[in-house]
Image 1: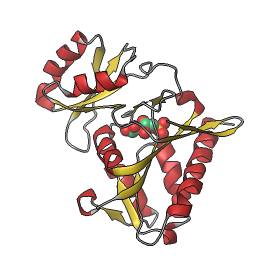
Image 2 (image 1 turned 90 degrees about the horizontal axis):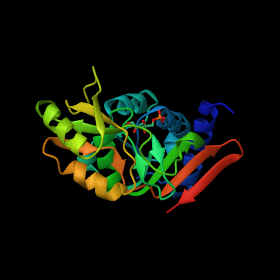
Image 3 (image 1 turned 90 degrees about the vertical axis):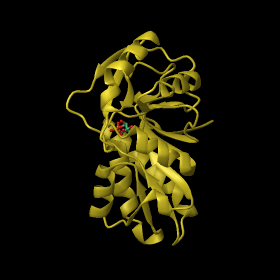
Length: 223
Ligand code: 5RP
């Protein structure tokens, strides 16, 4: 199976997982990236079974609208039963690295509101220790050099993601060469640096369910 077929399989598995819980009032949180895009395609086939979605990026909002799914502002939504999104890495405890698509801050906000965070990924994303994928950090533009110096003190090698401006008007530093043995602690320490908006560790609020696409089918991991 190709990586895209694995992503398609987990996207369909996520739709199968949430469908029994949907009704005409349901609003679904939707992530960003190629796996989330497959989820939108699969979800759109059932758009009459729920009310609409909250998007974690402008790109996702656009794609949802193209598929005829109404998009709501998160501020007007009281509760989200599900947030479905991909990841760049996951460990067995469902701590994640996200932000390869630079949407980490909005993703983290929508995930915080959702009761259940369903992560969908192909098997290559499951790792014993997080950190092989460079950790994205969203930073206010004027704080870029200051934050980079602090990240070096934490043992990382930050690299400015040239040419990328987030949906929030900020920049991204990708931190290489971290071996993240305590993701909850590192998430808090990076977020405490002045000028950081947030970082791509989803450890304080990990996924609740990981649907992992493997050659032998979709594997389900829970915390
Ligand atoms: C975007 C993300 C994505 O979920 C992550 O980059 C995975 O993307 P893909 O599904 O394309 O592999 O965090 O900010």
